[in-house]
Image (cartoon, rainbow, N blue to C red; front, side, top):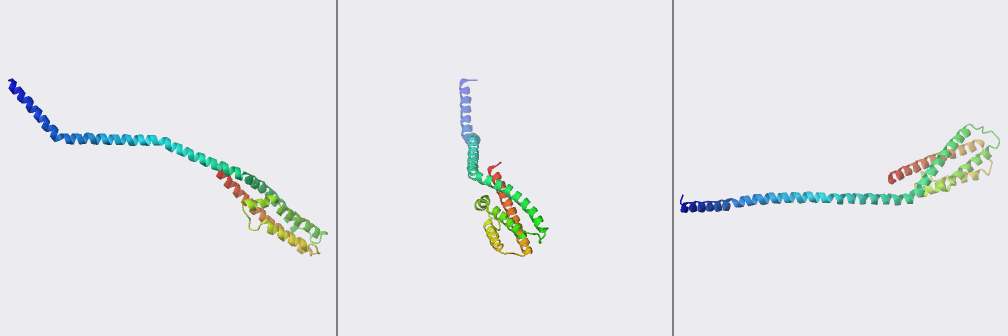
Length: 208
């Protein structure tokens, strides 16, 4: 083939290539750019999520530490109250058991027995001493108050003891003692529930 023919074919090929690139270059460029942009975006998203993990873990640790510090502070402030509740709960349980035995005794007592009034006064003063416990007063002040507080019971017992200054019928003595025993048993039961509830809440709060 002559040299002029070869040059013609090369020129035609170059021209065809330019036309093809001109027509299709926009589509190819857009495809390349679209794939590149999507790929870059996906990589950025993935890297963002990856680098966010330490931040999330750090935040979770800070929340746990803050919660732990709060529970520790509350524990230090209320630990004495918890010990009070534990102590009073044991005390009122023992008191309730002994009082119940006394109730059974007074129900079966011979109202014609000598010194019945003196024995009744002794029983009421024992109940009065129980109601005067500083621990019980602290429970009412720091935790919760039962339906009838110790101050009202103490006043009622004191008022009844004043009546003991004069001779009373044996039946009245028996009924007065049994009545106050019933009230103090109810009081002891409510105090036991109050302290038990407080202790449960404390243990849940401290996460033990």
